[in-house]
Length: 249
Image (tube, rainbow, N blue to C red; front, side, top):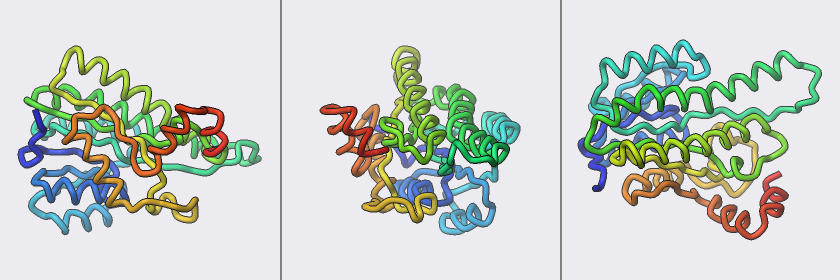
């Protein structure tokens, strides 16, 4: 059964900027209602102004466990129509693990773990019963090619994405057995031209393309999609994991 986006309500984290904003736009264009979660109220109001009839917003710092817990409790009580969850939000800090600024290093690492992993797990666990009550639901988690082969400059970010990849697979196994009407998918992201990647790398794809490929899993019933150049990494890793690590390092 194909998910009817025209009758769907999606929760998109980080949905007011970058890939998330494009996910929001494309979901609305296909008839869905979208609840956008983000930290910056100015950005949230801007995306809501673009789609006043289809978008509602929630200002939440996903690095704060208490705020995430409140969001889950509120949505479970007031938004039973949610049948799609897209865990898109993420932060990445390039860090020198040998810096003398130990307190700052630890604070940044904890924010990455909280935003990229803890909030994904908490939102998924909290909203799975809501999503499972619908005839057809979906959970899409955004990981990265860096989950396959990490780069030296962002060790914590890479670790969180590897954990999201593993969590998504295990979640999919359980849903296949106990709630087969809930599709679980992972989007393995390439380097995308967003604020987070400004000044980093080259050959970036546009956020519009990335969002379109992410949403393709809802149409094609795929457990994963390798976005953009991540498809090349997949092939290289099959042939030589050592080579893929060398390239990504």
